[in-house]
Structure formats: structure tokens, C-alpha cells
Amino acid sequence: MPPALVVIIGLLGLAVGSFLNVAVSRVLAGRSVLRPRSACPHCAVPIAARDNIPVVSWLLLGRRCRSCRVPIPVRYPLLEALTAILFAAEALRFGRSEVLPAQLVFTAGLLALAACDAEHFLLPRRLIYPTLGLTAACLLAAAAATGQWQRLGVTAACGAGAFAVFFTLYWVRPAWLGFGDVRLAGLLGTGLGWLGPSHLVLAVLAGSTVGLLVGTALIASGRATRRTRLPFGVFLVAGAIAAILAGAPVVHWYESLGDPYATGAPFAPVTGGP
Image 1: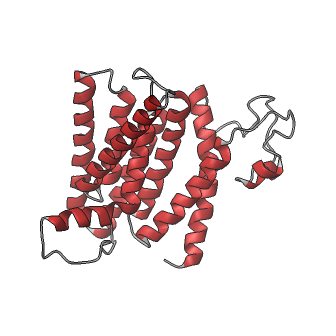
Image 2: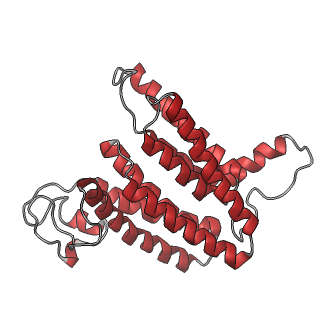
Image 3: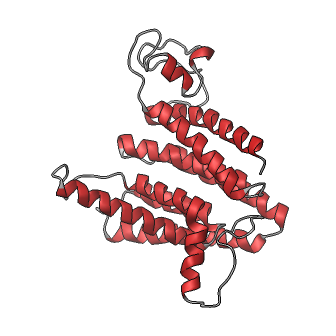
């Protein structure tokens, strides 16, 4: 993909990240995501266009609202910058692939969900279902453009299978998971299924391992106990994004262990996934 197009997609990520901030704040407050126009949640003064430039405005304003001087949470520029970085990274990863739009939509939704889970231990249906619907629609378009209907079937099976496995865990031990994690599993299966079931397994294993390590470290340092809640959704999202960006070489390496004659590049040519 031409560098200029990667930059454009990264700038698109900045704008999407700004929208995600609005979506996270309003969904958690039970308000409409689309209207009214953005305003300071403290003083209700509408935000001027000059103060709505992703990352830049936060820095120029000294991290405070222009009207009431209430601090603006650091989550705002972080989410904007992270969305831009991941959009650019996925543009480099997939190039001009028919699956790129689906992965961008999927990633944006995951970031919003991670922000909600990190701040309030919630994975709202109002974010999960639209992300699932838009991701599925983009994957359907990718299948129509490439003729890879079998891969779309695998995607649907991964989504249903991940939901079923997590639902079973939730039913057996409700203390382990919230039902939001069950819904998130279905979304992960759908978003990663196009890339292959191995990517889904890798995402869940990576996210669970990171969560276990973080929990163990917090307990060992005395900053948490066995009863302390951790936002498991954040770790699953991190595992999913890692699987998107780096899953292909890891899966290729693992598969080569069982085939001493396996050859080929770690990233397969992308016409709809690795």
C-alpha cells in the first residue's frame, strides 16, 4: 500500500478515535451517540471546531475545558492516538485487501469496548451489537467481492462457537465471567474467524495469559487480592489486536512445528486474510 494511503487511513483513525470517545461517554451515560453536538460534560458548553481537533486540541488547551477549566481525561487523546496507530498498522498489514474495512471497523469497536471495560467494568450491548453488525456486513461484502463464501462460513462458525464456549463457562461458573464477556467472545469469533480459527484461539490464549500475569503481579505487589475485579475484556481485546497484527507469523511458526517441510512467508498474500 502506498505510504500516502497509509497516512490517510491513520488520519481517518484519528477522526474515528474522536468519535469513539463520544460514543464511550454517551453510551455509558445512556444518551444518544449521534446528537446533540459535542459539549463539555461538566459545563455543557458546546465544543468549538477549533477545540475538537484530535490530540492537538487537548494539548493546546492545556488538558482542560476552555470554558470551565475542568481537566479533560487523558483517555481522550490516548484513544484517538491509539486508533490512528492501529488503523495505519492494519493498512500496512492488509494492504488493499477487501477485508481491511472489516478489520478497521472491528478494531474501532474493540477499542471503544476496552475503554468502557477499563473505566466501568462494562461491555455495553449498545457497542457490541453495532460493531458485530457492521463487521459482519463488511465481511459479507468481502466474501461477495472475492468469492470466498467458505471463509465466510468459517467466520460464522467461529463466532457461534466462541459464544457457545464462553456461555458454557459463564453457566458453569458465573463468577469467572460477566455476560458481556460472552457477547464479546461472539464478536471476537466473528472478527477473527475470517483470518482463521487459529487466530481466534491465539487471541483468547494471549488475552487470558496477559490477564493472569497482570493479576498475579498485582496480588504479589499487594495492590490486589484474589477478589479484586479485573477488566477481562481489556485483555481479550489486547489479545485480538495482537492476533490481527502478528497472528499470521505465530500461526505459521506453530504449524511448521508439525511439518518439517513447511515453507513460505510468514504473511500469506492477503486477498481477504492470511
